[in-house]
Image (cartoon, rainbow, N blue to C red; front, side):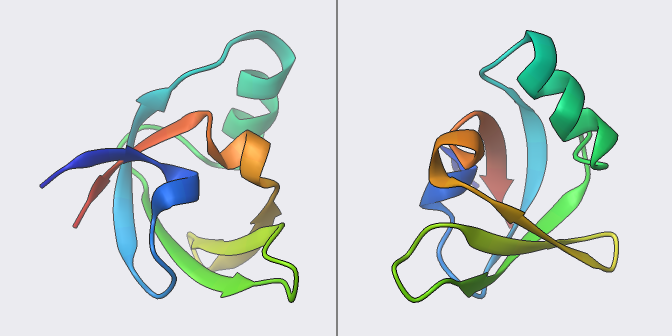
Amino acid sequence: MSDITLDKLPLNSSGRIIGFNCSGPLQRRLLDLGLIKNTTIHAALKSPFGDPTAYEVRGFLIALRKEDAHSILVSKT
């Protein structure tokens, strides 16, 4: 398994969240959305222009901008 940032996770593939490259309000917002350590996340849809991307987490779709997704570390599964 390799560790990458979430914005590099290919479409239709999954990973497990291992940490964050941010702190403060952004990290708090991500945690409030349910993006916590060891949670499985799936890159489900891309917008026509490539940003944002929709990710499936715990049965819900969450759209994240590339700059926010870059702050999340995942391990590809």
